[in-house]
Amino acid sequence: MNQGLEEEFMRSRKQRHRAVTHNPSKRKGRGVWVKDMREWIITAGIVFAIMSLLNIFVFNVSTVIGQSMQPTLYEGEKLIINKITLDFANPGRGDIIVLHDPSTGPDRKEYLVKRIIGIPGDIVEVRGGQLYVNGKLVVEPYVDTEIQDPDFSGLTVPEGTYFVMGDNRHAGASKDSRYFGTVPEKQIVGKVALIWWPFSKMKFL
Image (tube, rainbow, N blue to C red; front, top):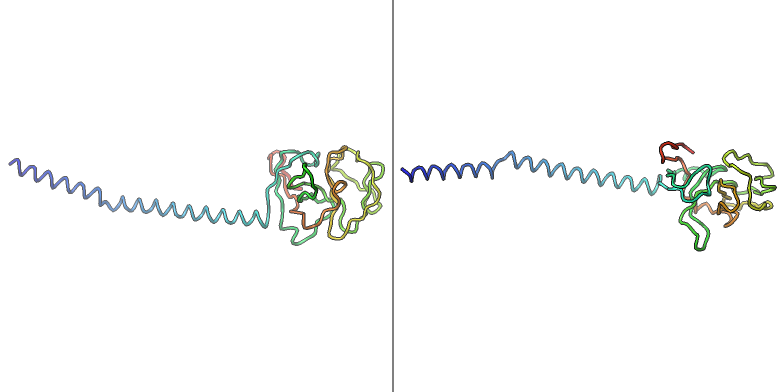
């Protein structure tokens, strides 16, 4: 009698074991999880590739360092740089651009943010603290003071280059074309399109 009960118990135990180890619903659940994980990895890879291509060819994100563009841009603000626009049109007077720093020395930076003042063929000069382009006084609503650095006589912008200045016209506040000369077009990275951070200052430029 006891042997029969023991055999019955063993058969029941084996059946339970097979039910647990060979349960198709559990295997199916594990397969769904693996499939979902694979799809998530593929999607993340595609998004990363697209964002990388956009960053290389279309736009970039830059952070303002220094005070040379005050009061238009302040240190720490984050900008969206439109890179592809230069493939369709040349920069124009008044555009705010990001460029590779053409200067040399210990204070050289990787990038600078400046405003285009003169395009190829323009004659740029400063008289009495005022900016003149092609002999005409330039009205600059984006500055908060006259030019406090020394005046300079007419300078003709060579072909394929641009004359740039910072909006901060206080003495010694901006390292620009008055310091390192005109900028070759190939050194311009793109046009500043948007201040996106902080959100309270978000605006198109």
